[in-house]
Length: 345
Ligand code: NAD
Ligand code: UD1
Image (cartoon, rainbow, N blue to C red):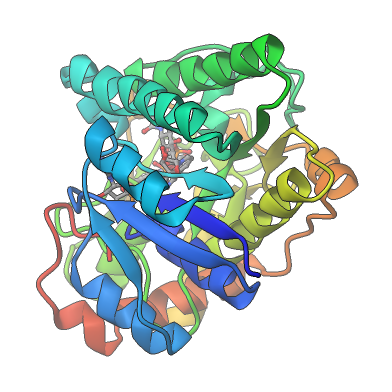
């Protein structure tokens, strides 16, 4: 019988791609999402993509009663936990909301899981836990450095999970530290499309290429990098989704807990991403060099060997493919729909 998975935040950007990968891998999946950062139409599109009805609960991760009811109904074997708030700037302005959803929400979920006897969880962490790392490519052994309340919530989440495992070995935990997710599903049915002005590079460039924004501001060209602009390890969201399937298989199979970076191990500068996007879209991407962005890190690149060793994880998609799929999504039929509150679909 297929194993049953609860996918929190499954209507969001990474969660929706992971939903498709989990269904393809034969799991029975229920999504829990409160749609604060997702569009309800994503459910229809997931049905279109998978050819199956979507099991979905519209609920808040902090709502223990609803969660307990879901566990009683479905007898989940494991949880993949995406539901969180993720905007760095907003976390500086409203830290309590971030602590509430990202930390209290996690604790609430863990309590309900424990009571239901479901003790396997994949947790969405981030390269942001490294702050400004001493070493690049950055290994998982690098120390925690919180740069802002959002980063603090990811560090706290990891620590809570580690202490839970130390207290009770029945817990099996997969911690995945994502580098910079980019791109979209090749069907152009799901992707990332913020309604407001995007903070992240690729969605911003997409809107410039589409003519919705006039120009890209390149935040600084005086970093100690080959062309002076910031370097990141961009990872295709479909590769990232596959990482969750492997993580889950390790937890459900051998019961092997793990902590791994999910990145490609390769860095690209802002100007390289601009060039790649121009090639993919066949559009111009005007840009202007401006001041450095406060709190920015010069280089984030993953040491990617541990994920390969422990999970057999290897990325398959290139930066050009991330740009091409982003462009296909941005110009596809669903780009005309009214997006959700922040617009992810
Ligand atoms: P997203 O905002 O698209 O997805 C998060 C989903 O969680 C949304 O659908 C939202 O509606 C839902 N959600 C938010 N608060 C909720 C609550 N209280 N109860 C129930 N559902 C709630 O974000 P994403 O980019 O898909 O990120 C998913 C996870 O990965 C997050 O934990 C994020 O911190 C982490 N992460 C993201 C990135 C990135 O660059 N996108 C990088 C590193 C880590
Ligand atoms: C940001 C967050 C980080 C989060 C990550 C993924 C900050 C300070 N950090 O990281 O915590 O984990 O997103 O969601 O917000 N750039 C431009 N012009 C732009 C936008 C970005 O030049 O308009 C540059 C940045 O300076 C950086 C690179 O592009 O060098 C990537 O930026 P971005 O996509 O925002 O990701 P991160 O900075 O890695």
